[in-house]
Amino acid sequence: MKELAARCEGAVLLAESEHCSVYQFRNDTGEGTITFYRVFPGVMLAYNDFHMRYYYSDFMPGRDVFCIDHCREGRLEYPASKDAYSYVEAGDLKLDRRLTHTGRFEMPLSHYHGAMISFDMRTACESLREEMKDFPVDLRALQERYCSDIYPMVLHKDSSVEHIFAELYAVPEKIRLPYFKIKILELLLYLDALELPENKEEKPYFYKTQVEKIKMLQQFLAEHMEESYTQEELSERFDIPLTPMKRCFKSVFGCTIGGWLLQYRMNQAAVLLKTSREMSVAEIAGRVGYDSPSKFALAFRRVMGMSPTEYRGRRR
Image (cartoon, rainbow, N blue to C red; front, top):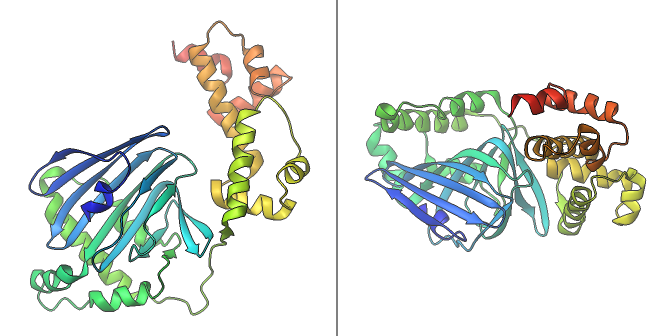
């Protein structure tokens, strides 16, 4: 599945060995890396570490594949149906055949960290049987069970899945390959035994036009953080009803409009405290939308765990 990386905009092969390849990505929004490990014939484990808002992929699956993505941190937008999107968040597991894996991929929080296990079905089905005699999982049946549609299936914050993947993020180098083998087999056994509810709760999805408006709204707030707008004013400005606006924003960015704006303002204030030492705390408060320095100081402490003066003093 290295072609997933190789066909992404700006992908550069940084390093390659017998069992490992590292690709780097860059665009005007940041950079990221994917580290691939060849675990079994036809089976790869990859670590995804992105600090960017989006990337482009022109990957078109030429083979029968089955991919399992675990989100450790951040959020990832994915197609949930035609012209509609939903979001993978921390703790979620996404399973698909990469049939919609092309075009622009959005990471609304500008970071995404996780692991991906990919199976080239033509090779992997046989290699797993050879690796472990009498292995009870039918990989083909598992693919059909979880990927009956062209769109991904997402399992949300399963504690057993979290346990399996948590141990994959800190593996000593000398035992990596054998340990990866054990954990992949454990995951397949778990997914094979998992009872899927008949009427499982689905995450909300939103149509492309709604998502585009919400992203414009977020950009507008970022560019006008020194000003204050009511949610009713934002609803009218971006021509989206108030309740759907709130729901869609929370799905895309993982928090309320007010929560996102508070975090954004405090992060920008932290940058100014570090880099613009000629500015007073009161000036910085005004720059990020606070008329009252005392209210700004309270908000900053709530988010950063210390006062603006303490933050500036600790980072000289």
